[in-house]
Amino acid sequence: MKLSALLERLEYTCCQGTVEQEVSTVVYDSRKVQENSLFICIRGAVVDGHKFVSDVIEKGAKVLVVEENVQAPENVTVILVKDTRYAMAFISAAYFGYPAEQLKTIGITGTKGKTTTTYMVKSILENAGYKVGLIGTIEAIIGEEVIPAANTTPESYVVQEYFRKMVDAGCDCVVMEVSSQGLMLHRTQGFVFDYGIFTNIEPDHIGPNEHRDFEHYLSCKSMLLKQCRVGIVNRDDEHFRKIIQDHTCALETYGFSPEADLRAEDAHMTGGKGSLGISYHVKGLMDFPVEIDIPGKFSIYNSLTAIAICRHFKVSEENIIRALKAAKVKGRIEMVKVSDDFTLMIDYAHNAMALESLLTTLREYHPHRLVCLFGCGGNRAKSRRYEMGEVSGRLADLTVITSDNPRFEDPQEIIDDIKTGIAKTSGKYVEICDRKEAIAYAIHHGEPGDIIVLAGKGHEDYQEIKGKKYPMDERVLIAEILEEDRK
Image (tube, rainbow, N blue to C red):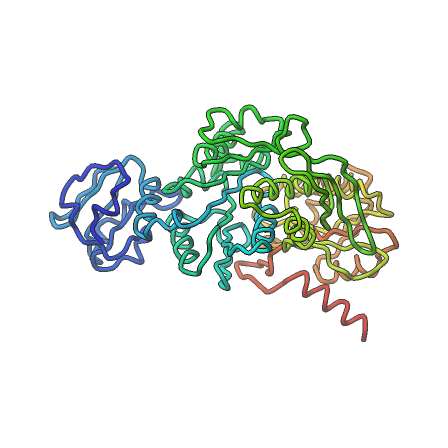
């Protein structure tokens, strides 16, 4: 492929060499360079690709894309751009033949709800006969292929590679989670989303390696509304005006607000033996009743978002109703049936904000007892342990403190930190370090009308201890416990 074709949608300066150079592969990892590769020098948080120039030239790279001047032999073409991450998105799109132009693309951003909403959208569209690719926090799904995720939003090269695979697999649309980091680092450049969705925003991901403050976080999230044709935004969010400021897309809204284009009215909590749910009526741009087997107000928002998107795909009301009833997301308020007497669920809530939201929602169902089982990850901020302990102590009737991913820390020390947070409340707790034993305790001591939450692990199927990941899936643990009980 000629270099000129890869650069056709970019502003650049050719410092030396020729844009007629033939390129065999596009690479941003110096270890993957081959003869006639184009190497993009990415300046990362830990490693700067510009430092590997001599190495990649030795391996056969014939084109360098840089954002600072570098020394290279005359037979190597050097392309100078303002931002190599931004350039990589457009180069990758060209390299894979602009696959996004052959798909309907749906991007979902927000502090909460991205994962659940992507799966709801996938469920509804597939129910209506579409073939849907998915890119998200848990995995990427391309036809029958499932690829575990390393980042919520992969590097732009990987996004375009996935898009290409989706087109080749016969997909006609893709729904993907779009993180603030992904937007900030230009991972979703190189194409325009057909639909961009903004679910909500709360202070999160603020710190030295993420966003400097809430304003920066909001600003990065809002970039999606400048990278899509139709923007669909939660009208109820207190930051709504700032979110839509400077948007360049056609705008639609959803929520409970009478000003929302698509509204939820007449919401009711529902529940049966070992299950919880919610029902409501959709008004505005559509008009029909909805019932879902996922509890809480945020489930209304997630499903409304999905409905707002799928409306553009001419999905019938019948298909939407049927698909929402069946929609389930691994590790997101995932109910596991163990008894008719009480409800057990698995959820990914792994920080104080998510745990508070979850437990507050479940309190609305007036359980006999709300039991919260969780641990905290090692080698992470200790403040998270104190905060989660305090939240669970305040909102749960019983907290079962256990181990999560201790990494290189002593699990007991992490448990002691959680207890420090609980001590600020009058909450009752037990501590059982082994997670399987802790889950068995929660199940064996379940009382009629209880809601038991296994928090923190969610979709994860491993436990990380001293640098090694050991298989550990809570669904498997529950099945083992129930099987052992039958013996």
